[in-house]
Amino acid sequence: MKKYNSLTLLFVSTFLAVFSVSAAQTKNINGLWEDVNNEHFKNGHMIVSQDKDAIYITHYVEFKGLPLVEYGIGSRSGNTIEYKVKVTQAIPGWTTEGTHTLALSNDGTQLVGYYSSDGKKGPLKFKKIGK
Image (cartoon, rainbow, N blue to C red; front, top):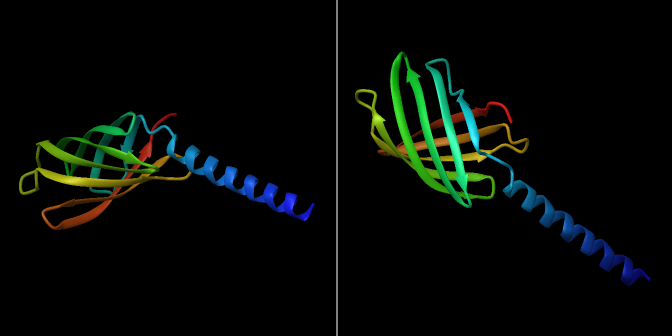
Protein backbone atom coordinates (compact mmCIF):
# COMPACT_ATOMS: atom_id res chain seq x y z
CA MET A 1 0.00 0.00 0.00
CA LYS A 2 2.85 2.37 0.86
CA LYS A 3 4.44 1.75 -2.57
CA TYR A 4 1.10 2.44 -4.28
CA ASN A 5 0.75 5.80 -2.46
CA SER A 6 4.30 6.79 -3.41
CA LEU A 7 3.68 5.96 -7.07
CA THR A 8 0.41 7.87 -7.03
CA LEU A 9 2.10 10.89 -5.49
CA LEU A 10 4.90 10.73 -8.07
CA PHE A 11 2.40 10.47 -10.94
CA VAL A 12 0.29 13.40 -9.69
CA SER A 13 3.38 15.56 -9.09
CA THR A 14 4.73 14.82 -12.56
CA PHE A 15 1.35 15.52 -14.17
CA LEU A 16 1.04 18.87 -12.40
CA ALA A 17 4.58 19.91 -13.37
CA VAL A 18 4.02 19.00 -17.04
CA PHE A 19 0.62 20.69 -17.06
CA SER A 20 2.07 23.89 -15.53
CA VAL A 21 4.86 24.08 -18.13
CA SER A 22 2.43 23.31 -20.95
CA ALA A 23 -0.03 25.96 -19.77
CA ALA A 24 2.74 28.57 -19.52
CA GLN A 25 3.85 27.88 -23.08
CA THR A 26 0.33 28.27 -24.45
CA LYS A 27 -0.49 31.68 -22.98
CA ASN A 28 -1.71 33.85 -25.81
CA ILE A 29 0.66 36.72 -26.62
CA ASN A 30 -1.10 37.77 -29.84
CA GLY A 31 -2.47 41.27 -29.76
CA LEU A 32 -1.79 44.88 -28.98
CA TRP A 33 0.76 45.83 -26.32
CA GLU A 34 1.39 49.28 -24.83
CA ASP A 35 4.99 50.47 -24.52
CA VAL A 36 5.42 51.45 -20.84
CA ASN A 37 9.20 51.88 -20.64
CA ASN A 38 9.55 55.32 -19.03
CA GLU A 39 8.36 58.92 -19.15
CA HIS A 40 10.44 59.72 -22.27
CA PHE A 41 8.54 57.18 -24.41
CA LYS A 42 5.00 58.11 -25.47
CA ASN A 43 2.33 56.76 -27.81
CA GLY A 44 4.10 53.41 -27.98
CA HIS A 45 2.32 50.33 -29.22
CA MET A 46 3.49 46.94 -30.39
CA ILE A 47 1.51 44.33 -32.28
CA VAL A 48 2.61 40.75 -31.61
CA SER A 49 1.59 37.86 -33.82
CA GLN A 50 2.52 34.26 -33.09
CA ASP A 51 2.38 31.50 -35.72
CA LYS A 52 3.41 28.24 -34.01
CA ASP A 53 6.81 29.11 -32.49
CA ALA A 54 7.45 32.05 -34.86
CA ILE A 55 6.96 35.60 -33.55
CA TYR A 56 6.28 38.69 -35.68
CA ILE A 57 6.17 42.21 -34.21
CA THR A 58 5.58 45.75 -35.39
CA HIS A 59 6.40 48.55 -32.94
CA TYR A 60 5.75 52.29 -33.00
CA VAL A 61 6.89 54.63 -30.23
CA GLU A 62 7.80 58.29 -29.80
CA PHE A 63 10.92 59.20 -27.84
CA LYS A 64 10.77 62.83 -26.68
CA GLY A 65 8.42 63.50 -29.60
CA LEU A 66 10.53 61.74 -32.25
CA PRO A 67 8.87 58.70 -33.90
CA LEU A 68 10.53 55.31 -34.16
CA VAL A 69 9.10 52.44 -36.21
CA GLU A 70 10.52 48.92 -36.24
CA TYR A 71 9.54 45.38 -37.09
CA GLY A 72 10.92 42.06 -35.97
CA ILE A 73 10.87 38.35 -36.57
CA GLY A 74 11.92 35.74 -34.04
CA SER A 75 10.80 32.81 -31.98
CA ARG A 76 9.16 31.78 -28.74
CA SER A 77 10.42 29.25 -26.24
CA GLY A 78 8.13 28.81 -23.26
CA ASN A 79 7.37 32.26 -21.91
CA THR A 80 10.35 33.92 -23.60
CA ILE A 81 10.27 35.59 -26.98
CA GLU A 82 13.35 36.77 -28.81
CA TYR A 83 13.36 38.58 -32.12
CA LYS A 84 15.67 40.62 -34.29
CA VAL A 85 14.43 44.13 -35.07
CA LYS A 86 14.95 46.33 -38.08
CA VAL A 87 14.22 50.03 -37.61
CA THR A 88 12.46 51.54 -40.63
CA GLN A 89 12.07 55.04 -39.17
CA ALA A 90 15.00 55.79 -36.91
CA ILE A 91 15.68 58.43 -34.33
CA PRO A 92 18.83 60.31 -35.42
CA GLY A 93 21.90 58.79 -33.82
CA TRP A 94 20.17 55.58 -32.78
CA THR A 95 20.99 52.16 -34.18
CA THR A 96 18.79 50.59 -36.84
CA GLU A 97 19.12 46.90 -35.87
CA GLY A 98 19.12 44.89 -32.68
CA THR A 99 17.62 42.06 -30.66
CA HIS A 100 14.80 42.13 -28.13
CA THR A 101 14.41 39.44 -25.48
CA LEU A 102 11.17 39.54 -23.49
CA ALA A 103 9.58 37.27 -20.88
CA LEU A 104 5.84 36.95 -20.49
CA SER A 105 4.65 37.54 -16.93
CA ASN A 106 2.89 34.71 -15.09
CA ASP A 107 -0.47 36.44 -15.43
CA GLY A 108 0.10 37.04 -19.18
CA THR A 109 -0.30 40.83 -18.94
CA GLN A 110 3.30 42.03 -19.35
CA LEU A 111 6.33 41.43 -21.54
CA VAL A 112 9.49 42.51 -19.72
CA GLY A 113 13.09 42.23 -20.83
CA TYR A 114 15.78 44.11 -22.71
CA TYR A 115 17.07 45.26 -26.06
CA SER A 116 20.65 44.78 -27.17
CA SER A 117 22.31 46.57 -30.05
CA ASP A 118 25.83 47.69 -30.91
CA GLY A 119 27.09 46.53 -27.50
CA LYS A 120 24.41 48.50 -25.64
CA LYS A 121 21.65 46.98 -23.55
CA GLY A 122 18.59 48.50 -21.92
CA PRO A 123 15.20 47.67 -20.41
CA LEU A 124 11.95 47.08 -22.30
CA LYS A 125 8.47 46.74 -20.86
CA PHE A 126 5.10 46.27 -22.50
CA LYS A 127 1.59 45.89 -21.03
CA LYS A 128 -1.10 43.96 -22.89
CA ILE A 129 -4.14 45.95 -23.99
CA GLY A 130 -7.39 44.02 -23.81
CA LYS A 131 -7.51 40.26 -23.78
